[in-house]
Image 1 (tube, rainbow, N blue to C red):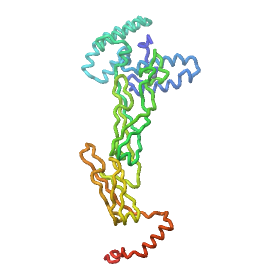
Image 2 (image 1 turned 135 degrees about the horizontal axis):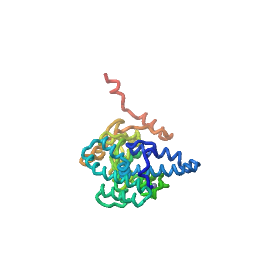
Image 3 (image 1 turned 90 degrees about the vertical axis):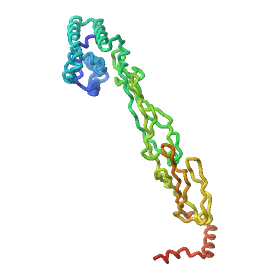
Image 4 (image 1 turned 60 degrees about the vertical axis):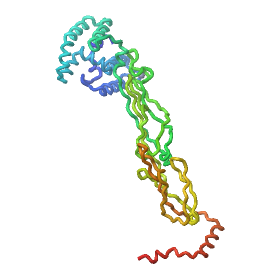
Length: 351
Ligand SMILES: [Zn+2]
């Protein structure tokens, strides 16, 4: 590594000096696939691979790349490109320093101690103080990305709120290299130089009551981990409420279709209706017809600020039991014979 200032690291990776971080990464990955000792059996390629690794180590590190660019003169080109007067003035200060450093590097090419002193001198120039290399590399915090998972819940879980276990795949800094990608100049064997590792994790999440299909529930800081002190991303639960043929939602109202038997419709009955405050007993009055609506006020969904609550609106639906016993059938027959009601009177009289 001592003489890397004299090498064209960009040429080694086959990219231009203004290549974006992503280009550097992808160029490196392509070359690894060709020159990695596990792939190529040609012993000459082992040196080439080492050279590629070294080039990537410098160019993938923002500060190291900047230093290298200064020493190689690339930095000046970059500044020309940006044409920022403020930076140019700074560059003039570098100019004589860089010229001098370059001259001396050539003269003492093999002197590692000297290279170290260039590093230190540049550190002083950039930061005005001495930093050790490890501390310097941990300088740039990177925030973790948010992640989204799909969660399917039942209609009652949506009404009542629920706790769920969700499986997430998230990234954390590599535990082997602590996100630094390299260990003693070699690509980290655990993460292959990405500095990250993917982990499956099970976490318990709380889904509040009143969510609907399409609701997004945010779980703070459970996304991808930040690097070097960067913020952790958030986890978003993308909610789908399973279809239930008896329940629908209209804003804050819960619309429920309630099946009752013909005799319950005639005699009236009490039915238990699930709500977010537990089950509510609903009285169906005698002589209730199919389609009749009943309301349980103030037991629907709550709005976000918990200042308003909808209703449960019940639509009664008379259902005929399909497994009627002989005895029941006889009773229905008896009922038919004694019934005097003319239920279709209105039907015939209607104009
Ligand atoms: Zn690693």
